[in-house]
Structures are given as C-alpha cells and as structure tokens.
Amino acid sequence: DLATDLGGVKLTSCVYNASGPRTGASAAMAKIASSAAGGVLAKSATVSPQKGNDLPRVWHEEDGAASMNSEGLPNSGIDYYTDAKTISDTMGENPLGKPYMVSISGKTLADNLEMLKKISSAIEGGAKISAVELNLACPNIPGKPTIGYDFEQMEDVMSQVSSLPCFSGPKPQFMFGLKMPPYFDRPHFEMAAAILNKYKSIVSYSASINTIGNALAIDIHAEMPAIRAKGGFAGLSGKAVKYTALANVKQMRELLDPSIAVVGVGGVSTGEDAFELILCGAQAVQVGTCHWNEGPKCFDRICGELKDVMRRKGYDSPDDFRGKLKEW
Ligand code: DHB
Image 1 (cartoon, protein in one colour):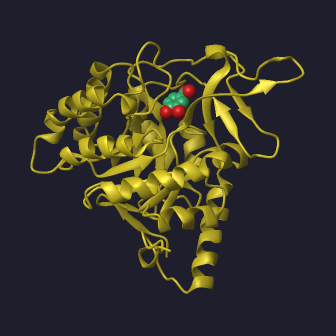
Image 2 (cartoon, rainbow, N blue to C red):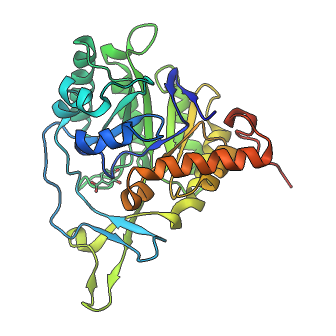
Image 3 (cartoon, rainbow, N blue to C red):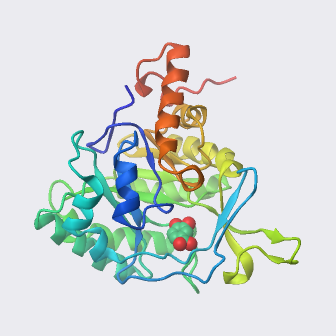
C-alpha cells in the first residue's frame, strides 16, 4: 500500500503531481484526481490571473532527458484555485477522499500574505483545501533573487507568514509546506534548513527541488535560444535533474527537524526513481516533467512500478525503507 501521511494529510499514494505542468485548470486537474496520484496540487497562483511569457516558453529534449521552461507563471489567479466550483470540478465525487492542495507564488511578500489570507477565508467558507505549498523557488520574479537563495529575504518571508492569524492558533489552519530551490553547497543547505527549523511549528514539509535555474537550450538550426523570454534562460527539469534532487532530499532530511517532512521532486519518471527518493528520506514524491510529457497516466504507471520494486524487495510500505539508504 502506497498511502502516506504528509503533515496530517492523508495522501492515498505517496506519489502525486508537482505544481506546474497540467495543473492550471480544473479539467486537467480532474484527470490527476481520477488517476493513481495520491492527491492534487494546483498550479502556483498569483493574486491576479496572468497569461505568462510569450511562446515558445517550454522546450523538451527529444529523448525526454531534459526539459526547460520559462513560462512566467501563467495561472488563473488565487480566487480561481480556492473557488468551491474549481475544487468540486477537480475532485468530483472523490470517493477516496484525496486531498486538494493549493500552491502560491506571489510576486511580492505582500502578495503571498494576501493569498494566504484569501485561502484562510475560503477554508472558513467551507472550501476543501487540505494544504498550501508556498513556492520559495520561483525563478520568474524580475529584479529579485529567488527567495530560497536570499536567506535574509527568506527569514523575513517566514517571519511575516508565521505571524498571520491562520498560523496563530495552537495548530495551523491548514497543512503548510514550502517548495525549495536546489542547493549545491553544504553551507547553503545548513542556512536554509536552519530557517525552516526555526519555523517548525508552522512548516509541515519542505519539497526539494524546483527547477535548476537559468539553464540555456539552443536551437542549432535557428542559431537562437530555444526559449523566447529572458534571453532563453530557463528552469531545467526532467531526468537530468534527478541526481540533484536525490542529493537535496538527502541533505535536507539530515538537516531538518524530524517534525518537518521532506517531499522529493525532480526528474522522477519511474517507480525506481520514486524508490530512490524515498530511500533518501522523502515522505512523498511529486512528478512534474514526466506528467507534462506523458499525461496523467504516468501516475498509474509510476505507482505500479513502485509497488513492483517493493514486492521484489519484500517491502509492504514506503515506511519500511524510507530514509534507509545504507552507508559504505
Ligand atoms: C514557473 C516556473 C517555476 O519553476 C516556478 O516555480 C513557478 C513558475 C514559470 O515559469 O511559470
């Protein structure tokens, strides 16, 4: 059985979708809900709807080895993702009681605070939103460093977020996680983890990794960048980033307080990939680029493959091998 508890929220499978691909509208999200995915995580929202960057804004290596995007956060705005109709159109009858989760990626701290307040009111009004993922890794805010790479900004964000009324009770009003950028240097892991640990009373999980920022793909025929916006600089994803994701999950698991779960994301396209991330300590695994390329049936395949690996190895549950990567 792949069912997993994430910060008190029951995922019907430890494998579910990453925010981003095929998560912008209820019609696409409904297909995730009716797949083997353990929950549904919506596209990162901004306060107002936005169209995103000019096309082409995504690029895929032909063999699926890597993808790139600089979409500029096209999304329908926070009011859409918290709306009761969006949620019921997405989740349908929801016989298994899968969780619906919202992602936010404000252009400013004020925008993130405003969206958290809107989510809080929506929940008070009866909206079934099980969790909120705050994106600290959005590479598309011009003129500002990515929050997760600017530890002063990150501390300020966490401090102001934690002071909101939705977090002031004995227990947060909703399960709350953070989406982290990839780190490449031990002191950076330590500084990021130290900030999250300071706010452990409100942080249920930390998801690593978002895309590897500012990569560049070239169209050799045109002798131009493959992507139009930002001089072609874009976020790298897909199989190429799995090794960075594994390392980030392992490092964060070692450094974070045990009360904070780690969610693994980056380059997962098989059950074996999911197994590896769980072995490094992931409580659950998100799938982004593979879902983009293959569509929602990837969740059925990846869950089936993960069960096969577990059966071969004699494991009944992800709990049997989570974080148990052996040492030399
Ligand atoms: C976009 C890309 C990201 O990696 C992210 O976290 C949010 C938005 C985008 O380009 O739309």
